[in-house]
Amino acid sequence: VTLFGGIGTVAGPVIGALVLIPLGEILHVHLAERLPGIQGVVLGLAIILVVSLCPQGILPWLRERLRRRGPSASHRALQFDPTAFVREVATSQGEPLLQVRDIAVAFGGVQALRNVSFDAHRGEILGVVGPNGAGKTTLFNVLNGFTPPAQGRVLFNGQDLTGQPAYRICRAGIARTFQVMRPFARLSVLDNVVVGAYARRADDGAAQETAREALRRVGILELEQALAASLTTIELRLMELARALASEPGLLLLDEILAGLGAGEVEHMLSVIAAIRRQGVTILIIEHTMHAMVRIADRLVVLDHGQVLETGEPEHVINLPSVIEAYLGTKWAGHAAT
Image (tube, rainbow, N blue to C red; front, side, top):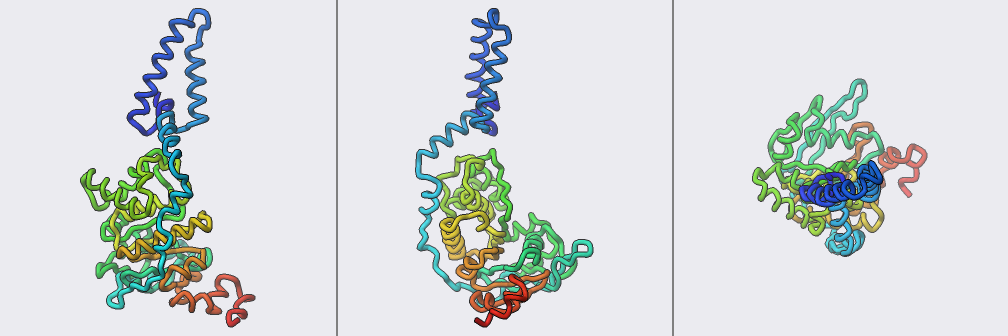
């Protein structure tokens, strides 16, 4: 009855019981003598059809059909005002919000990071770029407490967070999204985001209100009751972004949040990121889409082989021979001047 009515819901098994149990009894009373075993055959076929056509069950399937009668997913995405994306330099020139000093990480004989140092100022969008294997994700793992550094310090808002566990770093005000999305597929969008809100809110009601505000900030509040399994790629990205925002961070780490998005969806995501920065959140972003990074980042930190290669404004950094060589090889470095 749970499979038939709806997995992950309270009403689903009730609906399954109201349909399947009377059906089974009717078949048993009227057909059992002439067709022995017909009850099991019919109920088995019903389960096969439901699992094949609507794996989450009848109730989630009906909810999704009703939701899809509204605007399409791509149309909804465009409802977030694209003119909100304005290149702004709202950085603070005082004490940096984040200070990374001489970070080193090794995995066996592989030196993933060595002597990495940089600052992120309050209100800044700082891009972290570099070729595959440069150490970008390892750096994020250090910043949000997944990987303790072998040496160095991480200071956030004047507080030393070096080697602290992830939950303490989150409560201190650093949140993160991930390149590989792992939503709770059988939960609603709101319930997925509430998970992030519990970092700051112990009360269920307050956590739900915080989660709804985060969904509103990224433009998908109307999807709060949709199952995460039914979302498109950009909706999943926005849901994960909302989950990070629900912890009310001062610093947001975005790990390839544009991965898997089309050109129009990238524009939409840039608008959302810019709006979040205007709301007072400092952002560190890893991204391979260089043209997007040049547009949205105030400064770039270039990593190569675990070391900081260059730091500076995007227009300057992307034309440096050392950066071109790191991305494209020695052959192309000579073309940098042209």
